Image (cartoon, rainbow, N blue to C red; front, side, top):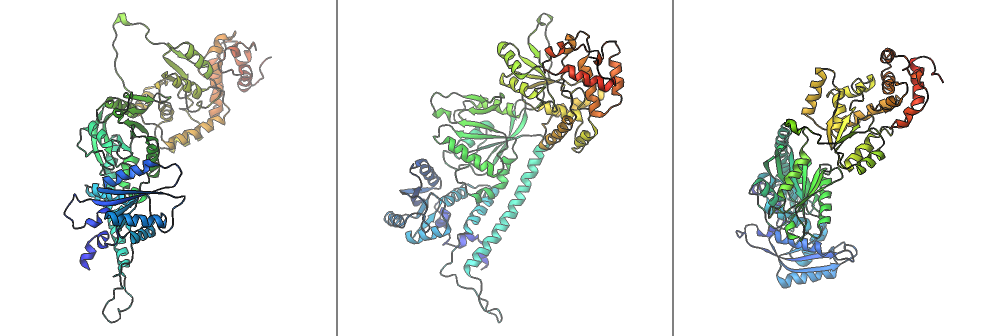
Length: 640
């Protein structure tokens, strides 16, 4: 009994067989192959031959010799045999005639269906899940990999235990202990349960070690790049070529099982970690995904996923969907991904290149890991996707070279006007717009729409008023309390980080009135990190507070002042009005008098000529707004 306890419960029960190697226990010949009859059922009128071909590759990867392939068509699976009774007898006759060792079924069978087929065929029956588990068992090399595979196998076997003919009650011989004892089936279940608990405890320790290593990399700001993709897409070959590693890579399914991590140097990014993970397949067993949780965690915590795709595979679209389903199951579907179309050397008229999205961000790279074509493009795309730092450098020009090299515009009008300008004047290289988190969705300012137009034309953006004339630095008390709950940076830092987190932002112009503000801005820009979800939610609350104030949506342009016959400083008047609305500041009245000491330049001095409204790019009702300013600060209605 003690020897029984020391062995795995899988090996204790010869009648329990899901692993193909179970019949080879004690066989010293590693090259011995199982002889198999393969069974496949078509459940639709359109026979999907590719599924059958993939299962044949799985069988070959499991070191199985296929003697015959038997196919049939059904509308639904049969309860007893999964296939019809006549077809089950046909399989049994084929097994006897060909002297096959095992029947491989390209579907997931219930324990009862497996036992019924084994009974009629008089040999082992292994479903798709069992074949995949067997391949993983053969490929596992590391201690962690072996633990994970055994855990998955035991979970699979726990529902497939059967009573043996010798499984009688075991009784104690002492007085008072006689009676119904523990059957062999109950013993097997108990031992499997104990072994599963042991494996889970060991894997918990391994996962803890992996988490510690991962946290160390995160503290050092070392990004992790994880290779994912359908099995046999060329991930390990690509991994070897990039890192000069010697990972096992063959043209077979699940050639790589154990995860491998290597350090990688990327220009303008620095040190990164490249992780080669297990390949995915359709109908990947759930127990396998659960057992490999610690390994797949590298994918969940990655900074960037390289989704490797076999470009020469006719089913590449279905393979992509299968991989995305697994990524969704392990909650890695939100991790940024870069598609890598491999094996273009097997295609005609396909050159290595990078595909970009509407924001000029690399989304796909076409290459050949076997020949090395396009690998430089992959590294360039990775650099662009990971690069989030501001580069500073010195440019020295000779006096005679001092001429205009770039043309840009400072824009305050509607988005459709900007689009027309950029269409008619392609020589414009950069656009300056007002952009902050309060005005971002304001229909009068149109920051979002103007930004989207710039991205459409691939024009870099220079941002003005990121702190909205200082209003996003000196916040109202209720808005200030929202940001203080974050225990992070200053209000200005959140405002500028919001702007700088958008792709294509070339420069953020932020006024700094003292050295302390400058040091604050420089510090958080040097260690720039995009806003997380909590910080974005806080800024949305601040935005709602500002919108409740009914502020005048004015920008920094001064077209209205230039066109006013009285030269009234209209933007300054609106800014003071907004300040009073935000802070209920009594000093705003003093500011109003200080700014407009010259006679004839108060809000009530407006001639109502309407010239200011004709040149206003925001089409604001300036005359009516000036009446409100006069009523607020001059305590008297404006003159008609």
